[in-house]
Length: 246
Image (cartoon, rainbow, N blue to C red; front, side, top):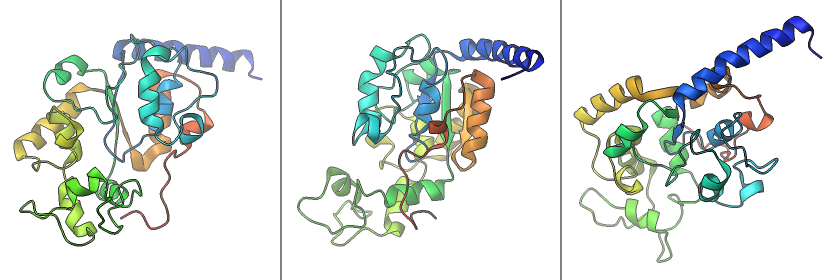
């Protein structure tokens, strides 16, 4: 148990964090692909954000099945206070167009080394980029397994072929608006979009963390917005297999 002085210190610290959370609310999580689905657990376990979340429920396969983020987003409006959290309409919602005006100043995000992010995406078994090309290939495979002229590739897509199609995902997500296909593939990011995305990170975010510095980023978020550190804050709900990094 804490002594009186330590208890008072914790209470003073908590009182300072609450105004920071209120100023940033409603939080809006910009989920850059392959940069931290687990960050949802830090957000929803922050005091006051999801008061009707079932006890013990976190965004992982054990709680929500094979597509936990999609399942959570369907439940989000019912369990979370919309004055504290803007529930995403899709896992990787874009911030171009009117979304930027609506969410500027409320955004929170984790950003990742692009090389690691692209490798993580390439080796994701859900998309099977390294599997055989078959008639039963998923729409994601058919979308991306194409050469520069748009003709489907007659072989397994290599990492070298795949990587250019995912360059600039975060930039496109910050500057474009439409379906998720706008960022996952599509036209390359332009120099102007890169400059705009950089400015938006500086001007429009209440919190930015680094995936490669996960523990430090979690502690910073807790220091800013409160909430108790939980074991799930530091768990990877979508772990890689060995060798699936740059």
